[in-house]
Amino acid sequence: MKTKVITSTKAQNNFGQIIDSVVQDRTRYVVKRRNVSQAIIMSLADFSQLLENSSDRQKMSDMIGELSPVYSLGETIGSSVEE
View 1: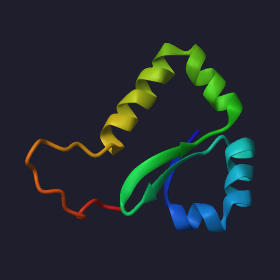
View 2: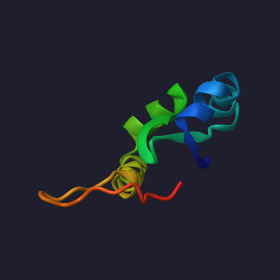
View 3: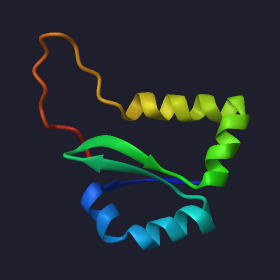
């Protein structure tokens, strides 16, 4: 199982191929919009397994924490997030 990061435009333009990859290859996609991670695309089988396995849940939680923007009160928010 692998995770790829793609832009929302690429996800929109290649949605059929992404769904095929998600189902057939169990690839997870993190979708970025305006250089910020916004969504995850994964298969139902992968999601079901994630709900059943606490180790997988923790790994996903850690990944989400790493990809989510963190803002502090009063902090200036820039657009310098890597793609």
